Length: 392
Image 1 (cartoon, one colour):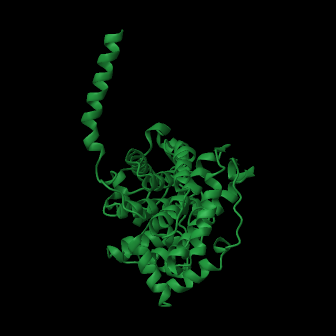
Image 2: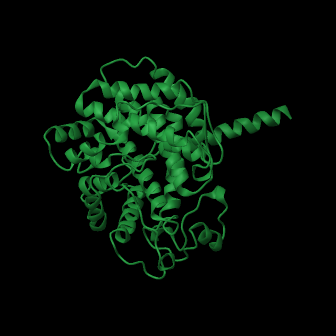
Image 3: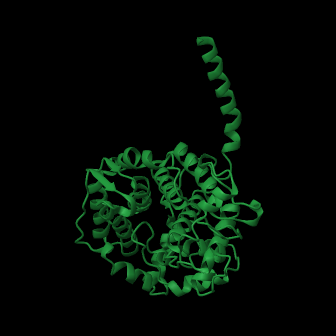
């Protein structure tokens, strides 16, 4: 038995070594991580700061919107708790809203610090991060993976800006890193086998946390899950008659797939797994796809030129068409759509239209109509400010 076990182990190692190089393709972790490097880069921040200080639009109005929000309030009192308990649709809500909004506030303050160089904002961001890292131990109940993904998407964006641009001290940055490593990452890195926007947001958080922690193994694992999930979330005609699926979900018949796609049986390019649920949840998924693609680009591996970018482009265009007023045909969600895409188009639009020069008429119309894009109060915030017409 012992010799058999050793042979099996050796065989597994050989298979693993043979598979390893092919797994480290265009979305693998960089040799050295770039900082700040979660969704927004130093060059993007500097462009934004220059535009705001010059009073240029739309950045100045976006900045004013951010500074007038509750998230930029220097009198904000953090509300950490040891256990954040979130049930379905945050019921019960024991610390769920507080955690998400404190994380967004920390990111808001970090942006405010960078643009104004007023160190009160850096200190407020640090106060919020320190308050939570000193207390939180766990997320519980049915929405724990999603809640962890939402808050965990904002925390590293704040931390990256403060750690790598603030000239003052942050003595507890190590404790904050430990919080991300021990409380957040284990809850999200293995996925939850849940609905599309859950997994995409969880992988956004896992990628961002991995960058801050400089954890290459977790980065690679999150990226691999992200690629699988993006392909299963946005349909392209090149996928075949039916959308791609996640093997672990056992969607092995057309009827199971149709049910999973909210009863939609006609599949067209740009349709998402949640289009017929509502555009709000669809927007969550689209936003996370764009955020991960942007982080990956900053880290030196551009996903916009891959199927990820094509799925993002088509999803944005398809949803934007109806969000700006096109009538839904009878074959689409029974001819009735629940709109409300949210402030989620700036990052993808900027990358695909402004940087790559791809025409995106409907997405452009919606993006410009919604400016300045604010926050969805979950994990999206201030993207006209950071990514609106930003060439970097």
